Length: 173
Image 1 (cartoon, helix red, strand yellow):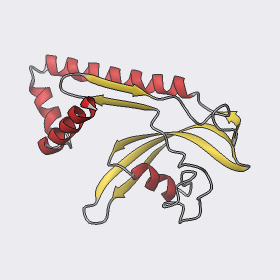
Image 2 (cartoon, one colour; image 1 turned 180 degrees about the horizontal axis):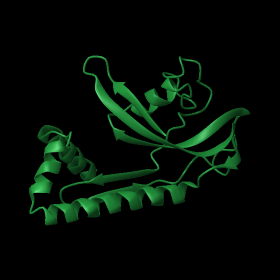
Image 3 (cartoon, helix red, strand yellow; image 1 turned 45 degrees about the horizontal axis):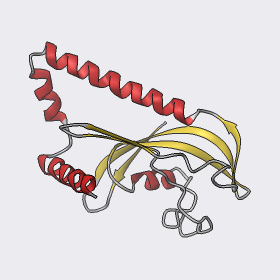
């Protein structure tokens, strides 16, 4: 499922997130759904906003649950896999899934819809395939296609420079 929205009030920007249901279960006796969220466009808190907008705020998200959900020890939002392409290298980071019964006995799974590792691999395969197709188009188009692709990119040079600066600082820590 793709969720559309508009980010921010002062400078609204279109934003999209992809949502894939992984499991249904309960957390501390309340029914919950474990999902994989992938921001396609937009910014920082859009995943929280999108979940709240469709009537399913993230467990433990006090702000976007209309200040109702404050019982878990943390917001149940976790960056499982990050893929950061830079001009020089591809940075991929994976952190274990904390939302399993062995890590948190309050989580009780009831039905598995999609397996997390398999779903991530499918998404990675799609990205690699898309990148390969774009690379081949650029080669076949004599570079014209690459210039067109760069012109369509929503990222400005300033944003790219800020990202690269952040990555350089992060790597030094």
